[in-house]
Figure 1 (cartoon, rainbow, N blue to C red):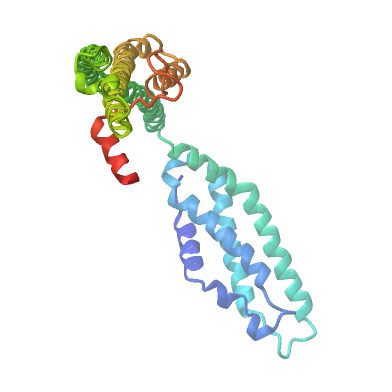
Figure 2 (tube, rainbow, N blue to C red):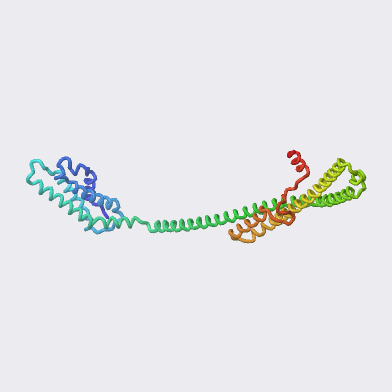
Length: 336
């Protein structure tokens, strides 16, 4: 499109207009204001400006160029009519002149809508660079692929983290189970040794008690024979009390020896059972990939470890803690 000098002159004239002042609202009042006409003129000017600025992109006929030039010139003519409109002293002709100017400007705006918007749309299409658009589309697809890749990597990372957490948890559980199993094994050995000692202590105390009974009631010691005491009742009481004390001490030794043997044997069996449970637990927990099954195994292992069990060595009233003679003597002393 070639910009003719007349068109350029018309555009320069429109460019110099102050559209706000052109409305003349304060001067003429609302009744004779040209606000609507000025809005039409400004819209036509904006459309003309877009066409002129992108004239090199347009290939149009000479007739169309002439129509654009005529439109710009007619707009300028009506701008001059608005600027030259006089109300004072022209009250008789003012209404018709005001109406005529508004109608002509509205007609020019309709011509603008028929002529210029199609050219502006063509300019916008021509401004699009196909290769640039293609590059942008390719970049958009590449960005989408990268986003999908990032999402996939994030999902894999999450799965790897979950797997790592599970492996760490299993490793810690296995390590803790092995440490606890070792502790229970040591305690089992300790109670096994103590139960052996108390077993032989029980045998010894039973044998000593049997010998004591034989000595006390066989007459080997004449001084402890009630027959030799005759009617000496104080002596009889003294001998009887002495024998009862000796027998009580012997019974207490036998009782405590047997009790401590049973307690230590009971604790040995329990700790041995706990050791075996903790040794097998890591293998059972690792045998399944289901979290619920693993939790059930952990629950049963904890129940087998921490709940008190029965071994048959203790009666219902027996205390699983060994009792020594020192504690018994202290209780007797406290009672006195």
